[in-house]
Image (cartoon, rainbow, N blue to C red; front, side):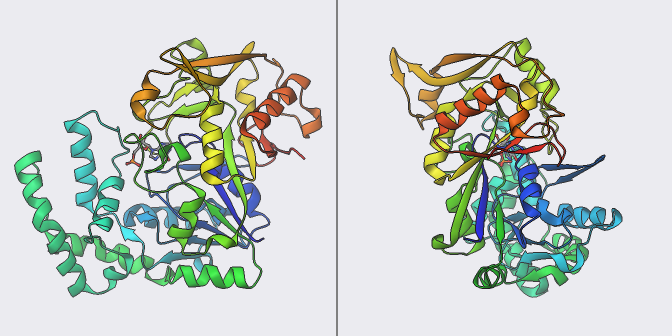
Length: 423
Ligand code: IMP
């Protein structure tokens, strides 16, 4: 089946872009279906590093079409900056990028509201890219879609409706001066002109590709634990970063889906607030952070690091219907003497083996660990899976067993070449 999905199984930042870039070599198209510029996808090619927030990571492959589908929240300036940078770095963008006419656009007032809410309460600790407010407007029927940008009268009308209520909130609650619809429309104009040639009915386009037997890869942003319904609510994002989100966010039927690849980091990280039972607030956590470069690609925030949590990934397997996993960043554990894996939680004297969805329960959970001897060998130069140290292979086998599906790829470094085929 030619529609394959790549999703994060943890709290995002699983190095999905590297997996997408690797698989994109044999794909005809790569589609982003959720989230917005809250995501930061890093791909290393030889000595070059690319960070994408909106453009699908597949853009680095010259024969791959890249599609930003309707489920994505688009920050226009960010998108235009990424397009400009790609062109400067001689990457083919022209005929390779398509943007959904139905995608919602992040407005300056969405970002202002997001930042103001972060300041008022410790809350979720968002990336302040306006993601919560733009999806809230979408569901309250007052969003602005890409297609609205090209009809000035309609755009102004919609901005006025949206701002009527928000300007009162800005002035009375947040002490922020009101936004002017005319000024916003004028500021958006040059960006709208720039993206216009890429705008299309992307659901139609994707379905036609699939009808023609082409291979389409769907690239999830964030991770399952940040899903608005199936994550650690309210410490989540506002979209569906799960395989089910593909159908809604890209406009395809579920029978199209074939491989569903869950990206699993060999340990776990989280940015922002919310429970994380296996968090390491010690020297090992700091070692993982430094070695893994665990700092947010969008905000630069230090990521919280911890041991691999089987309950989290088992939950992700069930929610996404994973057919396989891709393990990333195994090399980050190379120097650790004893590695731990969380196999259950202790909650009020009771052993839990399934992930509890309520954040207040999770807050009280103590991890129950199994210990593994570390391989204490550099794996970054290993050229094939069979050449990995036995102890590393045993760790990989344990992860597969815990999740209940096979691993197809194992990453041992940021570069394309540091990707091992596990079978
Ligand atoms: P928002 O998506 O900016 O509203 O943030 C909501 C929560 O999701 C916060 O905890 C963020 O740190 C987290 N988050 C959003 N995008 C990402 C991502 O790409 N990686 C990891 N965490 C993310």
